[in-house]
Picture 1 (tube, rainbow, N blue to C red):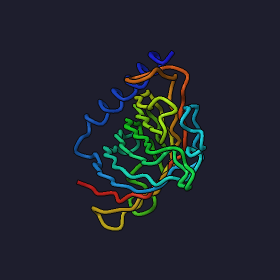
Picture 2 (picture 1 turned 180 degrees about the vertical axis):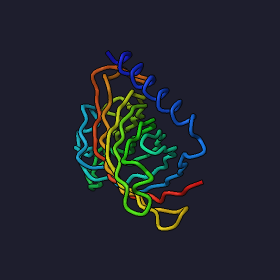
Picture 3 (picture 1 turned 30 degrees about the vertical axis):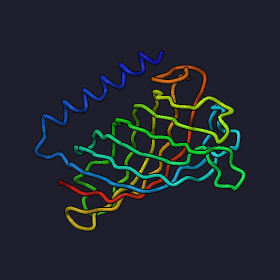
Picture 4 (picture 1 turned 120 degrees about the vertical axis):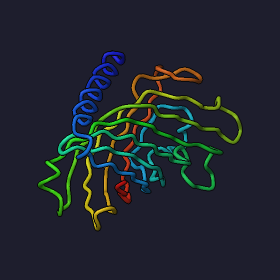
Amino acid sequence: MIGTRCRVVALAFAAVVLSMAADASGADRQIRPFIGFTFAGDTTFVPNISEGAGKVHATFGVSAAVLGDVFGVEVDFAHTPGFFQTGDANDLILSSSVTTLTGNIVIGPPKHRMEYVLRPYLLAGGGIMRVKAVDYFNVYPEVSQVKPAMDLGAGVVGFITNSVGVLWEVRRFQTLGGGGESGISFGAESVSFWRATMAVAIRY
Protein backbone atom coordinates (compact mmCIF):
# COMPACT_ATOMS: atom_id res chain seq x y z
CA MET A 1 0.00 0.00 0.00
CA ILE A 2 2.77 2.42 0.96
CA GLY A 3 4.77 1.42 -2.12
CA THR A 4 1.77 2.23 -4.35
CA ARG A 5 1.35 5.65 -2.73
CA CYS A 6 5.04 6.41 -3.23
CA ARG A 7 4.84 5.48 -6.91
CA VAL A 8 1.77 7.68 -7.43
CA VAL A 9 3.49 10.64 -5.76
CA ALA A 10 6.66 10.07 -7.81
CA LEU A 11 4.70 9.98 -11.07
CA ALA A 12 2.78 13.12 -10.13
CA PHE A 13 6.03 14.93 -9.33
CA ALA A 14 7.52 13.82 -12.63
CA ALA A 15 4.51 15.12 -14.54
CA VAL A 16 4.64 18.51 -12.83
CA VAL A 17 8.42 18.84 -13.25
CA LEU A 18 8.20 17.99 -16.94
CA SER A 19 5.37 20.45 -17.53
CA MET A 20 7.33 23.20 -15.77
CA ALA A 21 10.54 22.36 -17.61
CA ALA A 22 8.73 23.13 -20.85
CA ASP A 23 8.32 26.73 -19.65
CA ALA A 24 11.30 27.21 -17.33
CA SER A 25 11.67 30.87 -18.30
CA GLY A 26 8.35 31.66 -16.63
CA ALA A 27 8.96 29.70 -13.42
CA ASP A 28 8.89 31.56 -10.12
CA ARG A 29 11.79 30.33 -7.94
CA GLN A 30 11.62 31.08 -4.23
CA ILE A 31 13.57 30.42 -1.02
CA ARG A 32 11.42 30.62 2.11
CA PRO A 33 13.04 30.62 5.58
CA PHE A 34 10.32 30.33 8.23
CA ILE A 35 9.52 30.22 11.93
CA GLY A 36 6.36 29.01 13.62
CA PHE A 37 4.94 26.46 16.00
CA THR A 38 3.48 22.97 16.10
CA PHE A 39 0.22 22.20 17.90
CA ALA A 40 -2.42 19.48 18.44
CA GLY A 41 0.22 16.75 18.18
CA ASP A 42 -0.44 13.11 18.90
CA THR A 43 1.80 10.05 19.10
CA THR A 44 1.87 6.42 20.21
CA PHE A 45 5.58 6.55 21.11
CA VAL A 46 6.18 5.50 24.73
CA PRO A 47 8.22 8.64 25.64
CA ASN A 48 5.02 10.68 25.34
CA ILE A 49 4.24 9.72 28.96
CA SER A 50 4.25 13.42 29.84
CA GLU A 51 1.92 14.23 26.90
CA GLY A 52 4.37 16.77 25.53
CA ALA A 53 3.48 16.07 21.89
CA GLY A 54 0.14 17.81 22.30
CA LYS A 55 1.73 21.04 23.54
CA VAL A 56 2.72 24.04 21.44
CA HIS A 57 6.39 23.90 20.35
CA ALA A 58 8.50 26.38 18.41
CA THR A 59 9.69 25.19 15.01
CA PHE A 60 11.93 26.60 12.28
CA GLY A 61 13.14 25.64 8.83
CA VAL A 62 13.34 26.54 5.16
CA SER A 63 11.61 25.57 1.94
CA ALA A 64 12.49 26.00 -1.72
CA ALA A 65 9.82 26.24 -4.39
CA VAL A 66 9.64 26.38 -8.18
CA LEU A 67 6.19 27.60 -9.22
CA GLY A 68 4.56 27.70 -12.62
CA ASP A 69 1.41 29.60 -13.53
CA VAL A 70 -0.80 27.04 -11.70
CA PHE A 71 1.33 24.08 -10.57
CA GLY A 72 4.63 23.94 -8.75
CA VAL A 73 6.96 21.78 -6.69
CA GLU A 74 8.49 22.42 -3.29
CA VAL A 75 10.98 20.89 -0.85
CA ASP A 76 10.41 21.65 2.85
CA PHE A 77 12.75 21.07 5.81
CA ALA A 78 11.77 21.78 9.43
CA HIS A 79 13.12 21.04 12.92
CA THR A 80 11.10 21.07 16.14
CA PRO A 81 13.17 20.69 19.32
CA GLY A 82 11.50 19.52 22.54
CA PHE A 83 8.56 17.91 20.72
CA PHE A 84 7.88 15.34 23.49
CA GLN A 85 8.59 17.77 26.34
CA THR A 86 6.08 19.81 28.35
CA GLY A 87 8.44 22.41 29.78
CA ASP A 88 7.25 21.58 33.31
CA ALA A 89 9.69 21.07 36.19
CA ASN A 90 8.57 17.43 36.55
CA ASP A 91 9.01 16.61 32.86
CA LEU A 92 10.57 13.14 32.51
CA ILE A 93 11.96 13.72 29.01
CA LEU A 94 15.59 14.88 28.87
CA SER A 95 15.71 15.78 25.17
CA SER A 96 13.57 15.21 22.10
CA SER A 97 12.94 16.49 18.59
CA VAL A 98 11.02 15.92 15.38
CA THR A 99 12.59 16.76 12.01
CA THR A 100 10.73 16.60 8.69
CA LEU A 101 11.88 16.61 5.07
CA THR A 102 9.13 16.51 2.45
CA GLY A 103 8.63 17.12 -1.25
CA ASN A 104 5.30 18.58 -2.31
CA ILE A 105 3.13 19.45 -5.27
CA VAL A 106 1.72 22.98 -5.08
CA ILE A 107 -1.41 24.23 -6.84
CA GLY A 108 -2.88 27.73 -6.86
CA PRO A 109 -4.88 30.16 -8.99
CA PRO A 110 -3.13 31.40 -12.15
CA LYS A 111 -0.16 33.54 -11.17
CA HIS A 112 -0.78 36.12 -13.90
CA ARG A 113 -4.16 36.92 -12.30
CA MET A 114 -2.81 37.20 -8.74
CA GLU A 115 0.36 39.24 -9.32
CA TYR A 116 -0.58 42.18 -7.08
CA VAL A 117 -2.79 40.50 -4.45
CA LEU A 118 -2.42 37.73 -1.89
CA ARG A 119 -2.17 34.40 -3.73
CA PRO A 120 -3.62 31.34 -1.95
CA TYR A 121 -2.37 27.80 -2.61
CA LEU A 122 -2.77 24.16 -1.61
CA LEU A 123 -0.02 21.58 -1.28
CA ALA A 124 0.42 17.88 -0.59
CA GLY A 125 3.29 15.44 -0.67
CA GLY A 126 5.47 13.10 1.32
CA GLY A 127 8.93 12.40 2.65
CA ILE A 128 10.47 11.38 5.95
CA MET A 129 10.14 12.28 9.63
CA ARG A 130 12.97 11.74 12.14
CA VAL A 131 11.79 11.20 15.72
CA LYS A 132 14.20 11.34 18.70
CA ALA A 133 13.61 11.18 22.46
CA VAL A 134 15.60 10.36 25.61
CA ASP A 135 14.16 10.25 29.15
CA TYR A 136 16.05 11.20 32.32
CA PHE A 137 16.23 7.78 33.94
CA ASN A 138 16.55 5.54 30.86
CA VAL A 139 13.37 3.76 31.87
CA TYR A 140 12.40 3.47 28.21
CA PRO A 141 14.63 2.66 25.23
CA GLU A 142 15.99 5.73 23.46
CA VAL A 143 13.84 6.60 20.45
CA SER A 144 15.69 7.29 17.20
CA GLN A 145 13.59 6.49 14.14
CA VAL A 146 13.21 7.75 10.59
CA LYS A 147 9.68 7.16 9.34
CA PRO A 148 7.90 7.74 6.03
CA ALA A 149 5.49 10.65 6.31
CA MET A 150 3.00 12.73 4.39
CA ASP A 151 1.94 16.35 4.67
CA LEU A 152 -0.82 18.55 3.28
CA GLY A 153 -1.68 22.16 3.83
CA ALA A 154 -2.69 25.57 2.60
CA GLY A 155 -1.20 29.01 2.62
CA VAL A 156 -1.19 32.47 1.17
CA VAL A 157 1.71 34.57 -0.13
CA GLY A 158 1.99 38.22 -1.05
CA PHE A 159 4.97 40.19 -2.37
CA ILE A 160 5.96 43.55 -0.91
CA THR A 161 8.49 44.14 -3.68
CA ASN A 162 9.22 42.22 -6.85
CA SER A 163 11.77 40.09 -4.96
CA VAL A 164 10.60 39.86 -1.33
CA GLY A 165 7.28 38.73 0.06
CA VAL A 166 5.58 37.33 3.16
CA LEU A 167 3.93 33.94 3.46
CA TRP A 168 1.54 32.40 6.03
CA GLU A 169 0.84 28.68 6.07
CA VAL A 170 -0.74 25.78 7.98
CA ARG A 171 0.19 22.11 7.40
CA ARG A 172 -0.72 18.70 8.77
CA PHE A 173 2.04 16.09 9.14
CA GLN A 174 1.40 12.37 9.64
CA THR A 175 3.71 9.35 9.67
CA LEU A 176 2.84 6.37 7.48
CA GLY A 177 3.00 2.85 8.86
CA GLY A 178 4.92 2.36 12.12
CA GLY A 179 8.34 1.28 13.26
CA GLY A 180 11.07 -0.82 14.77
CA GLU A 181 13.92 0.23 17.06
CA SER A 182 15.94 2.34 14.63
CA GLY A 183 16.52 3.16 10.99
CA ILE A 184 13.62 3.66 8.57
CA SER A 185 10.67 1.95 10.21
CA PHE A 186 7.13 0.92 9.29
CA GLY A 187 5.86 -0.53 12.63
CA ALA A 188 3.03 0.52 14.97
CA GLU A 189 4.33 3.84 16.34
CA SER A 190 2.95 7.01 14.80
CA VAL A 191 3.31 10.78 15.07
CA SER A 192 0.98 13.49 13.80
CA PHE A 193 0.75 17.25 14.34
CA TRP A 194 -0.23 20.58 12.83
CA ARG A 195 2.28 23.29 11.95
CA ALA A 196 1.64 27.03 11.51
CA THR A 197 4.40 29.21 10.09
CA MET A 198 5.29 32.64 8.79
CA ALA A 199 8.01 32.92 6.16
CA VAL A 200 9.92 35.44 4.10
CA ALA A 201 9.60 34.52 0.42
CA ILE A 202 12.68 35.51 -1.58
CA ARG A 203 12.65 35.26 -5.37
CA TYR A 204 15.94 34.41 -7.07
